[in-house]
Image (tube, rainbow, N blue to C red):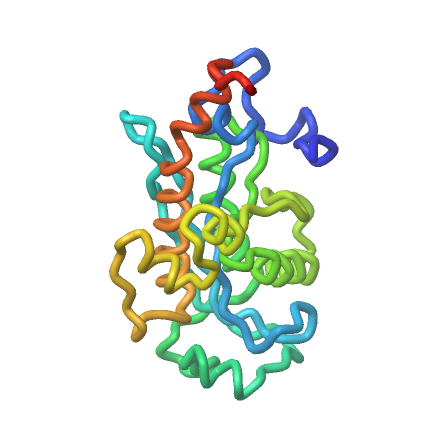
Length: 230
């Protein structure tokens, strides 16, 4: 992972010698950013990216993780993109409806990355790590779009992720997003589900809850006050 730290001329990197922020200390200099995409299928290289949303995070005064900023875009299918009817039946997206106010893929990524880079700099972190539910799906579409757009400085780590499906299974015994959200006592609106904006919001709330739930374990481990083995 350290091989993918920013170079010295990367203006998102923390100043040398600067005191680490709580975010940088908690995640070893990496900033978790929740991302969800809605797509025209399962093939990241061939199928359209139709929506992207992201949430940045912050710690409150009590050291609890919470949502900071949100960004969301409806996205125009890239030229030649495949769109499966089955995918649209799930999401309800009408890709060519002018009322979507969709933006070009490169514009959506550029504006999203601007928010992410600002959060990286503000927290003194070195790079973002994508957080998602079954996160490698979202990462694959993000990376494919980055390649199509010729973006040279992707603020996200190219392959590492935090996956709330895995974390949910480990901490609350649920791997399906709706069931994991139910398990932590949050309401779920099925009429809003399968939109990038809503799914990102709920994934962010789930991730914050899971990280906050293990806060005592983290503090015990990092304080060196571990229980003695018998």
